[in-house]
Length: 153
Image 1 (cartoon, rainbow, N blue to C red):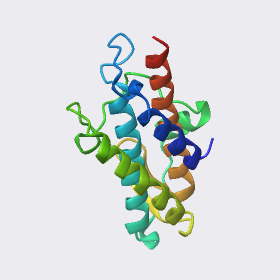
Image 2 (cartoon, rainbow, N blue to C red):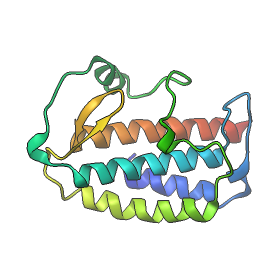
Image 3 (cartoon, one colour):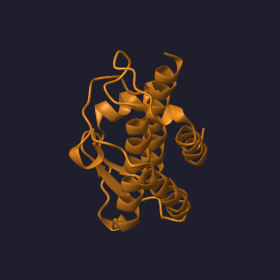
Image 4 (cartoon, one colour):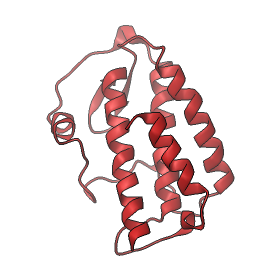
């Protein structure tokens, strides 16, 4: 699944009443939060990549990132989202839709960047464009799976 495919999937979740569904036994957050958190994270990563100076990129081995890349999934309940991508309040659908539209544009932009544009992840360190795309796919897939579990319950 590509990043664009994932955004398309997130859009689908906004177009049903399931957008407001919560199942506390699956996740403290509802579908709306997972959609918003996913697209907001993706957009902020894309913006960081676009605004980075590729001459400053330094590849450093990170065992946590290596493991996540190897298993292609993130364990549930092990990490907490930073405050700037965490909103447990009321999620405004119009803002989510705006962020989703922005996401399409940003994904196109990062496809034009040189390979050493990067962003600094709070756990995994500096990830270049290629690694950042992998991380965004794994992260978004993690939240899509949680959404699917909420919708099954």
